[in-house]
Length: 200
Image (tube, rainbow, N blue to C red; front, side, top):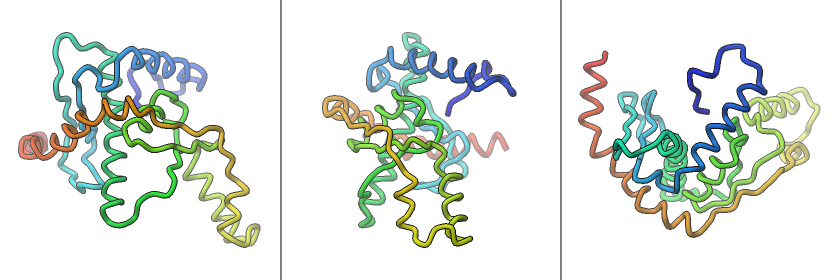
């Protein structure tokens, strides 16, 4: 989830939720492709598929005519591009995903879910319970203590609240931006590595 200064530590969940809904509504004002902005979201380096701790974030295409909506949408889209890149790597290795499940805080943002489906061209199954890792850990602990006998019983735990389906027109519009996203890391790698060294 993307935070800003307005999200104060200790702020109540409803207040944070209202602010996030406001930012989502703002991002929705910008069209797919964020009017020519592409972001590399490597703000803490990048793991899969580059395994590059010296990678850095890049905002490409920024002009004085871009709005806050464009920038926020470009940030959301960058995550979708990253997910698509990882899915393509899995396919190339011979492990195409059979089904995509969306978990975590991002599932509370309907625009972000739609963006990811539109970029990847894949349906996303969204469970009622969005706390994926801790929910799965609790189930595995249940197996460990004998409360459950088989991993297949996890199906009894999971109920889907929705399936987010891609929009074919939006998917086509994202294609050239995705190609730029894929090239941008390679084109900027030397520069961002030098910046990483300079910043210590």
